[in-house]
Length: 109
Image 1: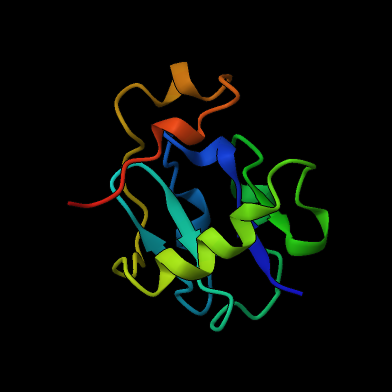
Image 2: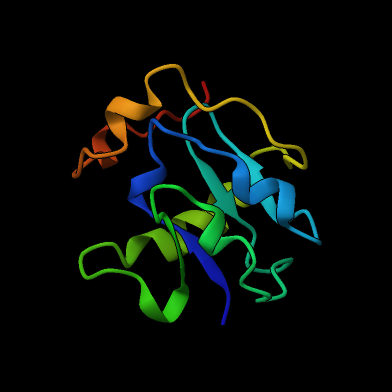
């Protein structure tokens, strides 16, 4: 088992989870975080830190979001590691309650 960042993180990018991770498994994209499944030690300390509930065990990914398991692995190989908390995106509070955000996932150029 590993943990996965799901759709709720898109356009929010709260980083409370990053500051508690003992192994630096988070990677940062323009408006989303991912977890590297090869580095995650399944300690579960990150999940309760996410204010929008975006982090779940790979066995508990919500129906319709199963593709986030592969998405986390793919982008973890491309995006830089983030090891310190940062401010969320400026409009994170607005996006926190929005669903269906996959179309808003920004990919680096």
